[in-house]
Amino acid sequence: MNNAFSGKLAHTYSIVARDPQTGEMGVAVQSHWFSVGSIVPWAEAGVGAIATQSFVNVSFGPRGLQLLREGRTAQEAVKELIDADEGRDVRQLAIVDSQGNVAAHTGVKCVPATGHHVGNNLSVQANLMLNDRVWPAMAKAFEASAGPLAERMVAALEAAQEAGGDIRGKQSAAILVVRARSTGRVWEDRLIDLRVEDHPEPVQELKRLLKVFRAYEHMNKGDLAMEKNDIDGALAAYGTANAMFPDNLEMKYWHAVALANLGKMEKALPLFREVFAKDRNWWMLTKRIPAVGLLDVSEQDLERILAV
Image (cartoon, rainbow, N blue to C red; front, side, top):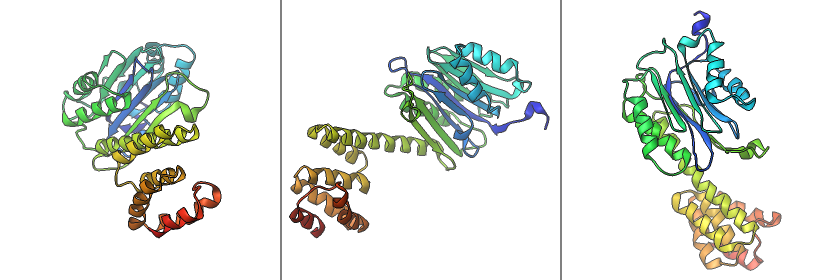
């Protein structure tokens, strides 16, 4: 294999997009290739989002972000990266910057069906597809959808699969979303970072994981509300999380603990009973957490909890 065809194979479909209301930027991708999320999507808060695919030049990710960081627009960054790459004919690259500028490149030797579409705050791109309807379907689905950026990008992936998808099939998927502006704390700037490394239905699994992520967001909001002594807000957030995933014992358990700490034992006990019945390890845990202050109840109430 000569230098022009060097790089990891990630024939795939992807979307890079920016939400003009929130300024959030992200990438979502699916491929019949293991762990596509480790090489295709790149994003940095306040900078931009990048998808590098086909015969992947992985360096386009960090180098592209550096160019954006230095003040290049998406168009300037794509041109500089492609012009300097002797493998440009087999590369596919898309960039959206923090100002909403978008640019993309599809090499003339990318495997058909292949192409891209640049729209308002988005670019969709695909190669080695079953047909040439895939990337137009992605753009249409994204533009017609509403809600948070992540859910809209997953809708684009679903549309790609419904239109035919990768001619080889399905294996992995990923989504990465970052803030509009950097806080200086990378762990807070990266809002969503989910990967499906190997799965028969990667897009549907990614969609499921995103729903789980949203449920745990409500759990975290509940914890924050508790810290601020916003009891009603905390219980509402915990309740929403439980409603989204009624079979999740962890969510149900900590909801019960919160209720018990608030003295709402009659509401807490049925939840404890349900959790203990399904997994006795939670009963064992309940005996341990009073010592570290996570369960702050009287000895009598602790006995009532353990007795259920």
